[in-house]
Length: 210
Image 1 (tube, rainbow, N blue to C red):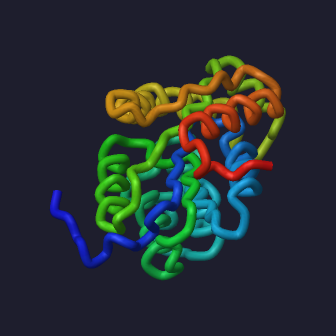
Image 2 (image 1 turned 120 degrees about the vertical axis):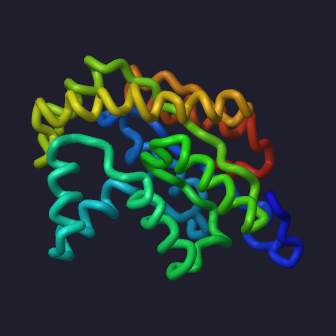
Image 3 (image 1 turned 90 degrees about the horizontal axis):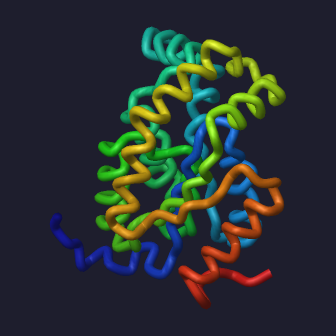
């Protein structure tokens, strides 16, 4: 992969985090805790919210198909997820911020693409926080949450694609020593405490204190 010396200072020293876990694992909540710690220089890239926003805003054949995929609880195309953070970097100019990716990448193709984009910007490669919640516990939380797309069939489909598509992504990061495995079958506060301690150990002085 080619280097780009002229861009070596873009985002230098900034942290890039990927938060993965089953639907219902509390990714969004933990992302908010992380962003509070990072302050104004942190930016949240929440793929699910972005895709729901597209569906609510536009009406065309692509959106109609995407809406059906989302309602069925199936995996949206990785290029749709990639488009969401391409837009944030290219149009939003967020490449010099700390970046927190919430629920993405969900395929190895997207993980490799994200690595290439971060390297092109001269940033450190992403570190993955995997919030590991059992399937029964995740399903129970989703049913309690009761969002519009949290129907039983959709939940089952999400659990299936997580095992098929997302677990290999966690293995991709593990092989490169970029995976932080977090026990998600705990309270929200306990999960955050474990994440905070793990990031403190990993980043030392780069990780902001309280």
